[in-house]
Amino acid sequence: MSVLACRNLSVAIGGRPILSDVSLSLAVGRITAVVGANGAGKSTLLACLAGLRDPSAGAVDLDGQPLAAMKPRVRARRIAFLPQTPEIAWSIEARTLVELGRTPFVGARGQTTADRAAVDRALAGANVAMFEHRIVDTLSGGERARVLIARALAGEPEWLLADEPLTGLDPAHQLDAAALFRRLADDGVGVVLTLHDLSLALRLADRIVVLAQGAVLADDPPAAALTPDVLRRAYGVEATLAQGAGGPLIDVIRRA
Image (cartoon, rainbow, N blue to C red):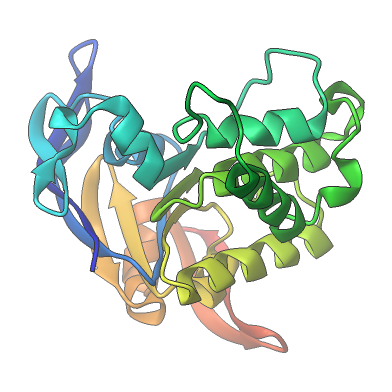
């Protein structure tokens, strides 16, 4: 079973600490939600776990092997990363954009039948097959976000690390994306998401890691992680867990 772990991870940018002594061990087949207030270090943690940012101290390992020692192509075959504000540099068809997710696998002879089949599965999984011949510039922000999820899926990674992947999606497509992440985890993929919607995190995640000022404040199953005390310390609000028609939710009462 694949394990992605960080040990005593610290990051400072311009002399300002962003992460402080973070240690986590993540397993495939589960959805881990990383939550916390703005500036808590969520995006930085995800970038480190993907091998895209070097820590100031500590290390990230994949199955016991330092991520920093892996060749980028090997790492990219195993870990897909979806940034919070992805840029699309070219005016290209959606399918062509999704095909870029196969780049770590494509050899000198170009795409194979297996590559094309993987792209088809990714387009279908993200529910964007109807857009495959549309120029991405003509898509709405939410539609582009779904195409970018498909690009991450095209590599059929062991790990999907997605930074605020549901931002910009309407409620129906948020539910679709959440169901997709659940299917991926059930199929054995390790899914790590940063989320601001705490009620969605409660319903979707198997495990919630709460960051506060760059440190781990809580790391537990959802209901145990998002207690009133943790919410007060992490967000500065008085809030409780409530039961809604669709499952548990966070009822924010006032500022602490």
